[in-house]
Each structure stands twice: as C-alpha cells, then as structure tokens.
Length: 331
Ligand code: TXA
Ligand code: MG
Image (cartoon, rainbow, N blue to C red; front, side):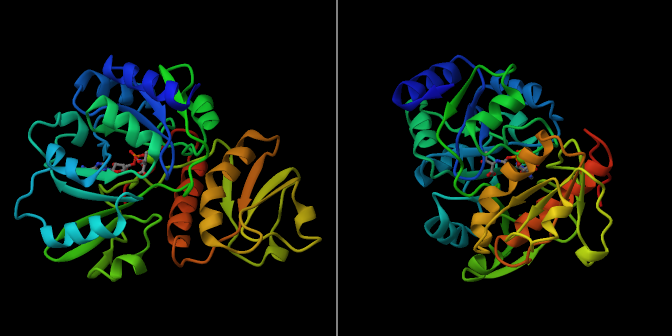
C-alpha cells in the first residue's frame, strides 16, 4: 500500500516501468496504466480478466491535455464540449471524443471514439503530471464485480495481481462518472452517474439511452456481488425473507421490519441521495463478505444521482442471479 508524496513517486516509477497501479479517483478507485504503453494497457485487461473488446477511459489532469488524446474536429459539437468542460471538469464527467491516432488502439478497442475525463483527485492529478502522460484506468475490480471505493477494496479485489495501490482515502462520490456523447448539438447519457440529467440540461438537449446496447456498463450483469441480490419491489410486509438475509436500506427501516434481517446497511439516515451513492458499493461489498446468505435492497428514488444508484442496483441484481461471472444478454 502506497501513501502520500513517497507513494506518488513510487506510483510514477511503477507506471513508467509499464506496471499497473490501483489509484484513487473522486468516483471509484481505478486500475491505472500509462495510456501510451500498449503492454501496460494489456496488463490492465489481464489483471481485471476483462475482455479486450471493452474500452478504457483516459484520464488527464487538466483540459489543456485534451489534444494529446483526442482530435478537435467537426464530428463533435466543440462549443458544447468546451462549455461542459468549463462546467464539470475536473470532475465525474466522461465525454466521448474523436480518438487521437497516436493513442494505442487497445484503449478504445478499435473504436474511433475515446472516452476522456479530467479527474479532480489531487493524488491522481499529481501522478499524471510527474509521469508526463495521460492514464488509462477502468474501475479497479475484477470484471463484472463490485467497484472499489477504498484502497483496501482494491487490495481485496486485485491485491495479488498488481504492482501497487496508492491510498488516497475513500472516493467521495462512490459511483462511476457519468458518460456522455456530444453529437449534433445534443448530449446522450450512456451511463448515469454523479453529474445528473438535470445538471446537463442546463447545457442543452439531453437524451438518456434506455437500451444500453454496446454502451458503457451495458452488460446487465455488471457490478454484481457473489451472493444473490433481490430488489424489494412489493410491500415489505408481504416479502418472504429467508433467515440469515442482509438488506441495503436507503434511510433505515422501521423497528420490527429491520428484525427480519440479520444485517442492515443504511445508506443515508438523512435521506441524502449523494451520501447514499457514496456508501452504496461499500454496503454491497460488506454484505457480500458477511455471513448472510442473501442480500435484499430497498429501491431508491430515481431522481438526481438516484438514477445511477438504481442503474447499478438493477445490473447487480441481474448479475447475481445469473451466477458469478455471467455477464448476461445485451438488450
Ligand atoms: O468514474 C469512472 O469513470 C471510473 C474511474 C476509475 O475513472 N472508471 C470507470 O471505468 O468506471 P470502467 O472501465 O469501469 O467503465 C467505463 C465504461 C466501460 O463500460 C466501457 O465499456 C466504457 O466506459 N467505455 C470506455 N471507453 C469507451 C469508448 N471509447 N466507447 C464506448 N464506451 C467506452
Ligand atoms: Mg467498471
């Protein structure tokens, strides 16, 4: 586990040598490699057991680095991209842009479009500045599993297979970035995240892709725990809860009902969806690692970042039912 300034220097040395390093971002922890070293990129796929067809997000420390990884041509609405960059970068927004030809094809799985974001995490930014190169980083979990929001989560997911983990404290958002395309003057949300539809609407017309064919996080079985997960859809009083079950609760449950469960994870006692998002993966992971046999979850309001939480919850439910590692059918 690497810490502080010395940890930054060690991470830079490892990345320069073509190793992969677990690194903190404001959304979730990423598994980082130098974006311009194809062999290092291949190590990401190997460590995560991720198919090569699934492209990687490129991180840069400031918007001035954009022209190293993306082209500025007429296939995107440049004015809109500039306004979004000014509004949300650094931060949890990823934009698909025309790929720079120098960027290895492995990053985009052969696509002409590269996903880019400016992370706000100071340690991640510092590593990129010292390395002098953009960093490719997917979430630092094994493919299809629960995303890590602490350095310890990364150690448990991938510890044996990676060269180092830089500890930057818990990720503040706890949920992966919002991913957007910006074409013909409109934005399309490919993956809901901390930057919400309402925030984006201030910048123009927004569409949300309902059927996630070939889009980020599109595989229904993503973010899955090893245990069966069931979203509570009917009145909880009618629900048959097997003995030794756990539950994810939004604000906490009424006395009596909580006694149906061996473990209760409350996401936000005050009912704050942002707080709930930041606690979501940790709660899922703790229940997955606990002695409970099955996990239930309340539904959360689908507004603001609640859209992203419910997106992850549904995929996790689907993935858990299909058994570990199954990625489900594309819709
Ligand atoms: O917040 C985040 O976005 C985190 C942190 C580490 O930055 N990263 C992350 O990466 O969530 P990952 O790989 O776990 O999820 C990125 C998603 C994947 O589903 C991938 O298929 C999609 O984005 N993606 C990446 N590049 C793409 C591209 N060029 N075209 C279409 N989809 C892309
Ligand atoms: Mg991921």
